[in-house]
Image 1 (tube, one colour):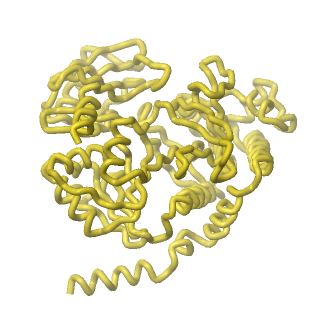
Image 2 (cartoon, helix red, strand yellow; image 1 turned 90 degrees about the vertical axis):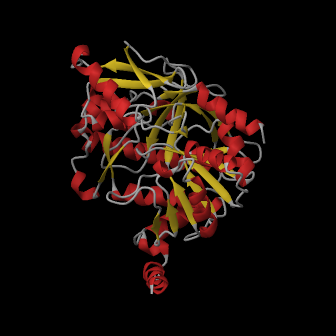
Length: 459
């Protein structure tokens, strides 16, 4: 009976083709974006400039923040006709978004059916913003275009190792999305003891794609290796959200084959690029505009620069020349390109890194535990693992911070989160240390990387 009910549910969820379930405009958008990637360089650059001009014009007329900003800096939207003109617009930082949250909404906000979202908190506390329904449809079309380029099709089986289970669900059990034909594992279920169970579930599901943060996948493979489990053939591993360190890439490609592809994007829908089979990371230049600048705001090419991003389609809550707090290198156009876009490399700035304790490797949510403790009196936080038992918490305090009251709160929050695996030392600093490559790293642990590297070299 259970098998029959499962079959009936599957028929119910899959009777309608997936593109139709995404809404009436998805198929048209998907075809348009899929066809455009084969356009010439000049055609794509012309399209990109048209979309930027249209966005700037709209933002000035309908978004209070930009109307005030442009007037203050003497920027006439009608005079923005080139990318050099566009660069005159001041950079928008995350703190600007927080401080001007309501003023960044269009005065036609309600007509866009916008959905609220929160950034992933890889460089700071999660930031609330909005994405229009149209922008969501286009983002979905661009992602599916990328997956099609990798040979992955609608409703091919897919495994996710990215998101927490729905509220009320047992996080040790995977969630099955029959509509998408995806098997979704909560990253909290990735433990040494549970890894063989996950292995069997994935092998039985026979996915064509695994979709994961690289740290989650590397940790899982590390445990599989310790259990002496055999490799699983998968057509493609698509990773996102974090820098793919060499230690991660080596573990993943040894287990799944040379099929690891990196996708670069953000919740704000202002950055989007996908690695194809030639190893190049192609910017989706018909969906976003990326600029690469040094710390003085000057454009750079061929060396690390701050990634300044603009998404074309989110008119409900436009983010123009938005500082991603990521660092990348602009690589231009390859001599032989698979699609008609320019290329880049992500150097750092995104993602969470692993910690190592006596229980094994794990990937912490650095800011979540502070939220759970209802603690908000900080600007930035960083964890550095000093030894197997000692964790240093660097904290940039806000104006409301009081050391005698707040330091014990932070110490307890992390002790509770890590279940006393570490002694916790809180150090108040004027500014979290930065490096040219990685900007503000949330987690620093040479021990974790050494553990991965040691295990990789032993195979």
